[in-house]
Length: 381
Image 1 (cartoon, rainbow, N blue to C red):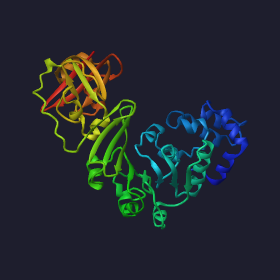
Image 2: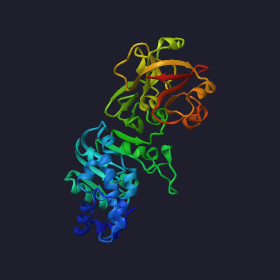
Image 3: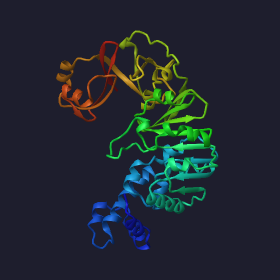
């Protein structure tokens, strides 16, 4: 975390100009440059502003102050922009660097954003001012203290609890995060009829539905990497949605049954479907592929005779499908570079490559899976 002294330095014209001049340079080179004032501090900002160009482009453009830990814990702007809530007023219980608040401010007249760390609250208010945002009030308060105040009313409450313990360990159970939203739910219900809760990508969808009956639960991914599990406790569910940012969404009611897939016949299939991770996490793969491709598991691949369209994921042409025979494959593939895909296969990718005698590379592309009790190797064109 940046210290109060460092924050004052970063606000000075001298360091703001030094950071602007050093942007685009190697941070290590900047840190060792004796002509740069407070070179280590400047180098750290140069490093995180470069990373922010992808994750937080609005912050990068405004040359905001970026404390490393707050930056690492912040939502990406792409994920923040996707939140599906709007109204007159919203309370953000866990402001942090203010990324979610920044996008909430585009859909609400007034945003009250709580940050319990006094220095981070100052930094966030400063950054929002640099970005020209005028309808966010940053309040230095814990969620527990603020929710105990009288006369509060908001259309929505938003929360992205801290998922690190005091020792720095990652927490998955919602009750172990800070603040404890489960314990605070009665207070939240007292001041707002709706709650939007961002959870870890490891958070279980069924657990979300158990804790918040009647909610919408959305699994959000970017670049086939699960980013967050968002609960909309507004009475509009129960509904589960898988969203791949920039690609599309698919929704279904919990418990909806997918059609049974036929017996697997490898000679029939000419296309392999690699479902996006959001579908897998939401357990919606088979429902999404119904009528487009055959699928035997929500964690597996799909297979199609004709090229399917409208898929949230990738569709790859198949050369042939054969039983997994590691000894024969090793004789044929040893030493070659392999782009490996696997779903519902018991071996880690590194171990599978070791057994096949291959290395990461682009000589050929293969997929591996298990269907029923049988293991299969899929050669891709």
